Length: 344
Image (tube, rainbow, N blue to C red; front, side, top):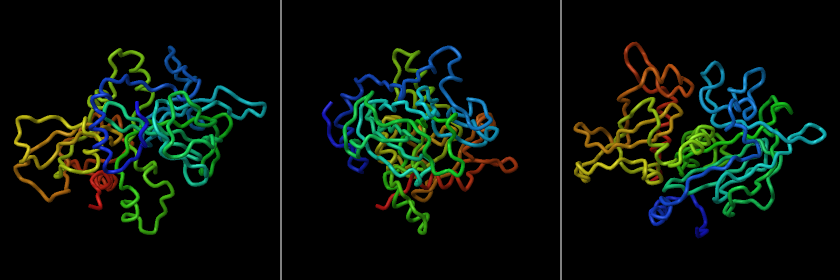
């Protein structure tokens, strides 16, 4: 693969379009980011994940796993298996797939992530990002724009964070995420939404990432010979569907493979998308629609909620039910606002 600079800019979809034929033929594979690969063993979860204080290892997994299921955890907390004489973690943290370093934060006090790095990957026409957090050290050679190959060392596992209660030695772990970026204009969105706030991490603020379940992906790679990340995303179980009265925005340009084909529709009349979101808020399927009663461009409406999914996955709090009526919460409306935001 030619090593062109990786840049999350509006012109990126053009580059992806040129590369799609090659990308679709490429093998999809994410390697474990540390030497701890016990996840794939029978009953290996307890040796792979580390839980929060006083909680079982499952609280270190992805999803609605904290505060009795009402708090969302965005990634996987991977247990340390290598220690020095002071019982500090020394596990090398490795890049999960070939890509470009897009961000490095060496200042632990600026984020719950502590010291962290983000790497961008091109897989089946999709921009995918891996995030490595709580590192004690990030190798100085890594900076934005550098090409990095799968298995290359990014840094060393640690316990860094800006939280009041420091991560204990016993809980030392790598917080690992696989995610899609929501909006490349996040800094402008943040400035408009929080004019007095401080965004220290630009696009790579954790609030601008829509996560996938790393452990689930590792398992499916192991069990499915024809594993496809594109199909994995397309086949998510929806928590809710929304009708979005807009057809061009950042997400649809970045993630073209997630838009369904609609040859039966007159393309000139398509004025909305029926969008499916999973429980984490990730928009994974866009169905083109000709809305008979078009609303204001850029508006949205909730059209369906899976109540059973809502009961089993309540943590993101994007939708709620008042009486017999489902509606977006303030957090849900803010999520859609970010998804559609544009300065143009």
